[in-house]
Image 1 (cartoon, rainbow, N blue to C red):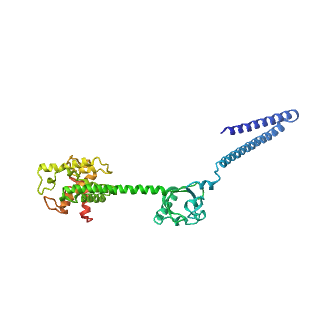
Image 2: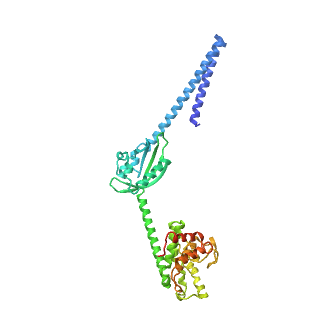
Image 3: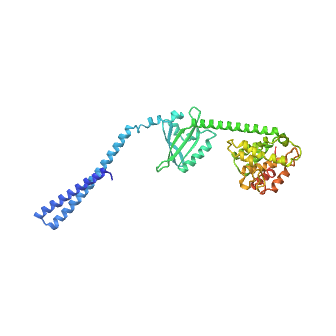
Length: 404
């Protein structure tokens, strides 16, 4: 209870005490001198006390109403000073469009729209209140999704969605539409439209720039891969095919597009370390000696050293280092086992074996795809990741994937 309310209560109590004391005292004195105390005094005292109590309640009620009136007058004065009652002027100075929707008889209609809609969208308030006005001006490519998302928001009670909307001059702007349900007997929602065209254009520019950078990265990686192939012309196209097979296996396993793109990049670069291997060994038309093979095996570490300081969004350097590791630990250069090997490297390892066995090499003709698949099938779970091996076998045997 605030100070003013306490003062009112004390005022009423003092009034009641004085009134009761006066009635009791005066009646007692009069009837003591002139009347029968046991009958007349008792009835008169009760009536007097009831009268004082009722008058006290009435006084309290009047004071309470007076206080409420004073507060309302004070709020109105503040509101008037801040121009809160001049809503047209307020909305004319903002870029937000405010509107109210009402759901009645299973139909949703706008019942109020801020007057600045004309300046922003070049549509009049009268037009905006017409049935189906909103749906009619949605961009054709956004209409179905915008209507469905709006229905979900109305069912949920609040939400935000974005779409393109046609202005009165025929141009389109990008709108962010936010809705919240109001506390009212009839379902009503207050909505706010925000023009986000500038933000969208900035996002589009950033996306286009990122796409350009990504394209440049792919072109650079492809150029580097071609440099590797120049030193080993007998395996021309090997890196690209390994990348494509790896991405196809990843897609069959359910990995997303970003994961698949990383495998394409890794495939193009997985043998970049062969730059450090003498050309005469790479193109030797006969079987390699133990020493020569040991030198070839070092290409995984060479590749890791070349790639480790490049900030790829995928573990490309680790893939180059681990693509000759095997599940049972019999691979090189680190003898890693099972999940110590990254999933990307496990996939590239299978793609590398399949492409290498199926294609020609300086020291032997191509063995064919069926021989390569038999190797994967026989050693799935031992040398090769069983899930990646199963996906590879499905890809070639059931879905007619071919190496191009």
